[in-house]
Image (cartoon, rainbow, N blue to C red):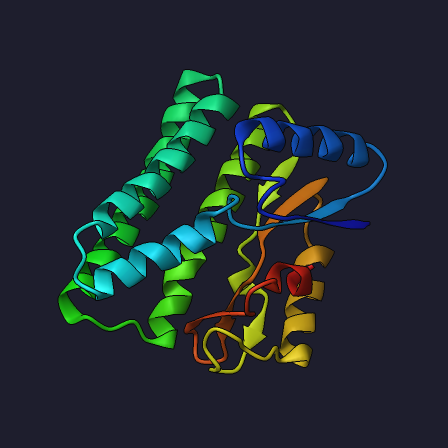
Length: 211
């Protein structure tokens, strides 16, 4: 079993993601692969920028959101040829983007960005990239599935820089991988959930820790 991690630059464009797919196609011929992926390159900073503009009552947060939306939809267009598969992926990602936009609208109204909300906000980057990449792998005929790291990694309630509960997390990981036969499992890095079920993150650079 191999554990591979790809950062934002590696998944920053359709061209780069094709390189990742090629690596995984080769590696999965001889090993089961656990693959942690970051948000698309620049998206975490874009999310923070959009949120800060919203909190500061700057209407340009809408432009910042549009940049995030366009980047993801452009990657989907470049990655997936099959029309029905592309439509499906866009539908799911657009739903996530709609939820993100609603969150930003809420920040604009209340003028406050708490650590708890920051974790929810930043989770969108990893959740969208991991979904897109897993579907691109399937579109290429590879034996891949997606597992949300938030269902495996358990933390305390220290939002934006949570501490992992090792015992609970290890049990979840062991149980999941004992019961999956997929050659490639894609997992979002950086994100987790508290023992109370709240969204948490492992801090900037946390995808390395996820791996």
